[in-house]
Length: 95
Image 1 (cartoon, helix red, strand yellow):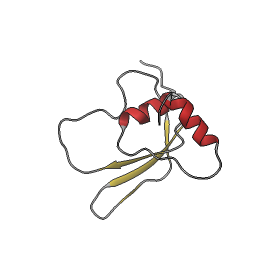
Image 2 (image 1 turned 120 degrees about the horizontal axis):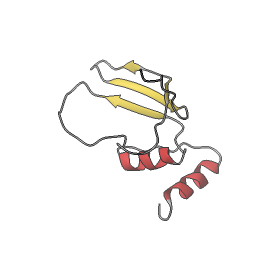
Image 3 (image 1 turned 30 degrees about the horizontal axis):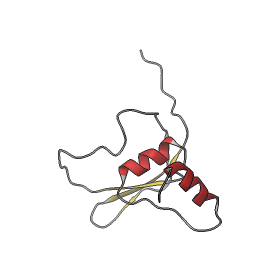
Image 4 (image 1 turned 90 degrees about the horizontal axis):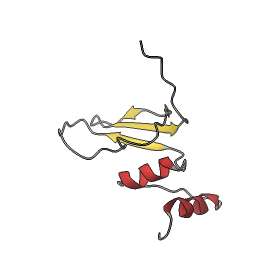
């Protein structure tokens, strides 16, 4: 794709049929989340601690609540978690 990512994805989503997927690009997912263009997130959590790596979600930007809609694990212990964005989160008052 070229040009503005959010505009291009909005145009693709307006077309009938099909499914758009993003594989392995945290930067694209973050940009689409910021524009409200993500319908569902599937996270695969592999049971390995690396101690380093890139953040999937940014340290800055809006907080986004996620509703868990489909958790399960495969035979090797990989957790497959399906979430849907649920707007802005609410927090309990401090104190």
